Image 1 (cartoon, rainbow, N blue to C red):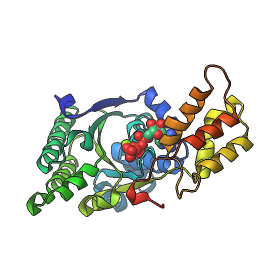
Image 2 (cartoon, rainbow, N blue to C red):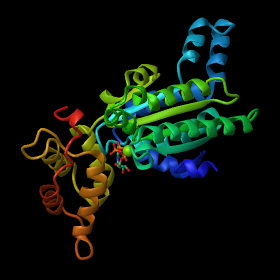
Image 3 (cartoon, rainbow, N blue to C red):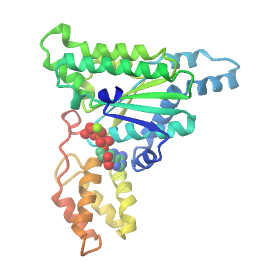
Image 4 (tube, rainbow, N blue to C red):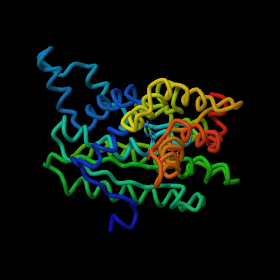
Length: 304
Ligand SMILES: Nc1ncnc2c1ncn2[C@@H]1O[C@H](COP(=O)(O)OP(=O)(O)OP(=O)(O)O)[C@@H](O)[C@H]1O
Ligand SMILES: [Mg+2]
């Protein structure tokens, strides 16, 4: 059933997700904003209680807030933590708001062939499933997140299409879907990730309650990431600082590493270049950095 459409169905609270969330460093500004924004959508009773306790009624501004489409966009360069955060933050909300959350993940670039009709169908069927799921959970303390990863396919399919009437089919399906979940018996939040924010249809961008911008780590963020792994390996702060200056920006380039370059290439190589005969040293670290170029930025983020 739903597992044929969705790639991942995950429920929270989930201690594994907490660990993944905690491992994402340097994005506290995003985490903090996301926590409060998601909490008011997934537990709307909370803000009503707040309003009643201070103003003895649900004030107009709370009503305005609740009118917003339950859509967040995570936009930014490759390997900057969009997918990792989207798949892990729900644990925090489940714990603080005392709700059960089920996340349904659909990855458009993996699943849609780029043919407009196919993506449109996928989106419509996903929302059908979500509505059914929400109806069946009516009356419980359950909430749903619909996570559309790699949503660029929505934009790509429009570019590929020559026919005007098909142009906006996927976009319209998404808008219809979002509109259709507002009145379900339990809260549903939609999250879209994209590398190509500027090519997402303006109608969707306008609807997003919040757009979170993800970027490559700054020197400070790179420092805290290195520090969280290297201090216990006896690499000093001075050495980490020097390594950071080689990474951000990277030798002669206008950009530096992505988070995933650091966690999936540089740090693992450092370990494997030391194992099995030697402990980790600063010299090995600089050697690995010199031989590991950063991922080229996605066009849109070049030079930023
Ligand atoms: N802020 C961070 N702190 C630590 N590690 C991070 C951070 N962001 C990303 N990573 C690491 O990079 C990996 C890849 O991140 P993720 O898949 O979330 O990137 P993405 O933004 O979704 O990229 P893409 O646009 O290519 O899909 C994560 O699994 C994690 O190991
Ligand atoms: Mg991703």
